[in-house]
Amino acid sequence: MALPLSGGKDFVSMNIYKMLERFSHPPTEFCIFRLHEELRQLNDKAYDPEIISIGPYHLGKQNLQMMERHKLCYFHSLLQKKNQRPEEYVDAIRSLEQDAARQFYAEPISLDSDEMITMMVLDGCFIIELLRKFDMEFLRDQNDPIFKRDWIFKRLQRDLMLFENQIPFFILCKLFDMIEAPGNHKRLIYLALRFFSDLLPGTGKRGKREDGKEPHSKICHLLGLIHRNWRPSFAGLEPVEDASNKEGKGNWRFIPNTRELQEAGVKIEKFEVTGGSLFDIKFKSGVMQIPPVTIEGRTESFFRNLIAYEQYSPDNQLSYVTDYVKFLDCLIDCAKDVKILSRCGIIDNWLGDDEAVSNLLNKISDTVSGTSTHFQYADIFNRVNIHCNQPWNLYRATLKRNYFNNPWAMIAIMAALVLLLLILTQTGFTVFGWKL
Image (cartoon, helix red, strand yellow):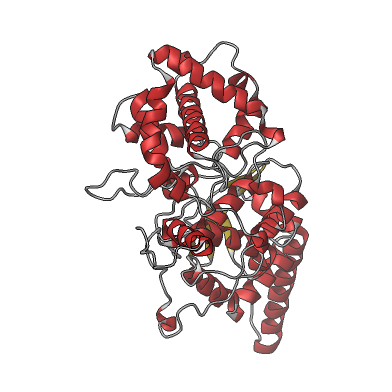
């Protein structure tokens, strides 16, 4: 909306009016940001693309030029197969560039209109063709290095999940209308979820779609799509509060690490349920059930960028990845905790080094300042701490650890009990004059 001009038309005032018009829309409309330094400071590389630039923030970087040729190759091949012309795609995106796509970015974009359209057409068509070729092998060129070299493909999966490396999802939808079938955006979502399925370190649960709305209506970009679909069963619900804690919402403490939990009598076991989620952790009757999680080379970058997405989200209840990483940070203080969880089948360690996994998870959590007011595991933490503080549980765990885990100690206890029984029997014969 244009701002009214005053009587003065000096150069400085005109510049200020232009600046105000540029930022006249509400900040919540922004979906793609540059990350602040606090998130980047511990591992800057986790947020930077290794092989491909998508969107304007990393465009033109020298180390990413290899994939620019592949973007052109994919677009050229697409035009030939569809018997289309480049201007058809340019015209389709031009109408969205100024009023919609450019406004998705929190920072002003230095590209002019033609450069912005070129970037969105090439990036968007490359992404769509990559998803389609992954799903349908007959579309691939015989010597396509992306599918011939595993390291390229794996890095593409990683880079397409970077918070700063995104284009608006509605741009992908518009291009998909021209490449496959108009309005079939469920198909685009399916292709994207399938493409990124092996990047997810655990099982996910697709969220419910809003009645009467397009399934893509609230999706900002590919990272937002994965976050929206890789969600727990409790997503969108208030955390269950302990009945004794209704007056003090959020009054909870962090739980001990894995070794201390076991010493307090908590049994930790692997939990897998069809249709469940990585985030669906349970605690009942002294047993903590945790779904398995895979830790590999791309896991840190994936978690960090999902956390960044949650940090910038206007909805402060969409913090389940952040809360889950904080939960793992509580469980894991050192390599011994990782080893215990690996033996339980909860951590699938592809890094091979327990210390590396411990450092990775602890450092990710360091970038998160505190926890949200809607911490999803507050109720579980309260019940775990209550269990750990009960004297009987501590005594029972100590007895089991010191005496019942060692077979020789068990034999000694049994021998002592037999000896005590014999002494009592002999005393009975002596004192009470029992006869055989």
